[in-house]
Amino acid sequence: MSAQDNAKLVRAIYDMYNERDIEGIVAQATANVEVVSMAFGASMQGLDGYRQYLQSWATAFPDSRVEVSNVVAGDQGVVVEFRGKGKHTGPLAAPQGEIPPTGKSVDVPFCDVYQIKAGKVASLHNYFDSATMMRQLGLIN
Amino acid sequence: MSAQANSALARVVYDAFNNNDIQAILTLADNDIEFVLIPFDQHFYGLEGFGEFMQSFKAAFPDCTINLMNQVVSDEKVVNEFMVSGTHAGVLASPRGEIPATGRSIGYYVCEVWEVKNGKLAKVRTYFDTTTILRQLGVTPAPGE
Image (cartoon, rainbow over all chains, first blue to last red; front, side, top):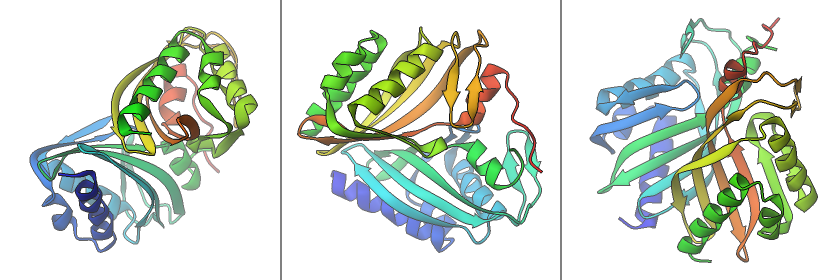
């Protein structure tokens, strides 16, 4: 795959998230895809893991949208900087346990690093500052 | 610049950081460099601002090293995933306050998005999790209202 093909593949993922086409996203990944939340120190394996990862955001922030600000595409990897915006009206899965809905809105910068193998997502590393999110939720000062 | 040259530039900069050669890094940066700490939305401008940030970080973690794990490169950009390790032996300054030396060890993951202009480092956006760092330092953030 060329860098351009990789960029196209990954950009489509963010459009699909905004349309809540979780299955459409999962269909872009290899069977043994690995998703790592760097902030939460959590690693999820396989298509089920990827599905749960995406669903957990959609559950906590049902109206959430992702807005891509920058894409860096290489022959084997793609990086996406984006903002995640939404209202916390569902339970949020966090390392310290489930956080019940706060009703607060968040707007948080994220950076996703993908490895692409044979036109599919082989791994995803998700970076963000969880303190920024917890502060916006009113949970820390 | 080729993707290969951008990759090499980043490696040289991180090696210089590990060798405490801040001056060498500054010769590889654009005069108008902008360095952004995403968690604090904190911006450092120019060689002076960038140099001050690096000196202040080295003062907090004098033995700190960067261990590069992965790069994604294009003709104009290079993204670097790495681990920062070190001992908190000096005052750590952040927009949210100063943390006196705790003597504790840290090890956390960082993702830096670099924009390269004329072979020099022109913009850096740095992503990391401050909750992880505070936990490693044994500092608990105050609860919200």
